[in-house]
Structure formats: C-alpha cells, structure tokens
Image (cartoon, rainbow, N blue to C red; front, side, top):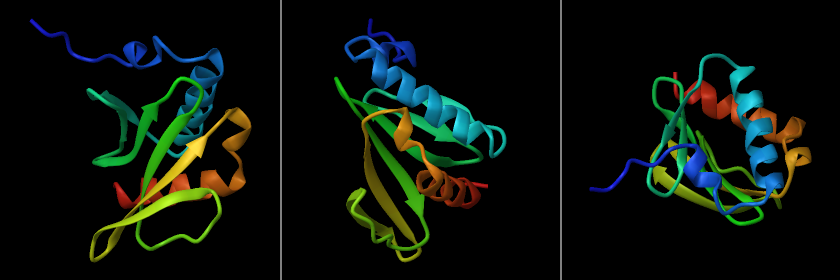
Length: 116
C-alpha cells in the first residue's frame, strides 16, 4: 500500500533553508487570503479556489511555478510556458527567504487573483 504524500514528506531530504523559504512563501500567500496546501506526489499546490502556485522541493532550492495571465519578462523567470490562450506558467527558482521580495509578492498576488 502506498502512502499519500504529506507536506512534511516533501522536506525530508532538503536543507532547513528550503523549509524556511517555503514558510516565507506560504506566509506571503496567506497574507492575500485563504490558502489551502495540497500535497501531490512531486509538488505542493497552493490553492485558493483553484491552484495558483506549485512548489517543488529540491535539496537546496524551491522551484515555484505561478499562474499568470501574460508572459512576464524577468531574469528571475527560468521558464515561461503558455498553458492556454489566456494562461502562462512561470517557473522561478527560490534560494532563500529573501527571494520572497516585493516583485515575487506582486506575481504571487496576480496568480492568487486568477485562482479566485
């Protein structure tokens, strides 16, 4: 029997900095309104009505994928993928809690609004 993934299981093989970064991201998301964490096999989804962010843990970083209504040009965006006519998925690598800055909070807020 396989066990369902948990939030804690995503952090079993990561540095403490990765967990601190996730906690800062989650706090920034919850400052926008209600957020539910949904642990999946390979990531954690942050959900309003629908998912607005996906977080994949790596040993020393987080890979954050945000919903967007348009392509965002920034050196912080490692990958931008058009998901549909009106949706983009933006991939951002987070190395520490300081990466949860005003620019990222703005993108997070826009993604949160799209998920309502």
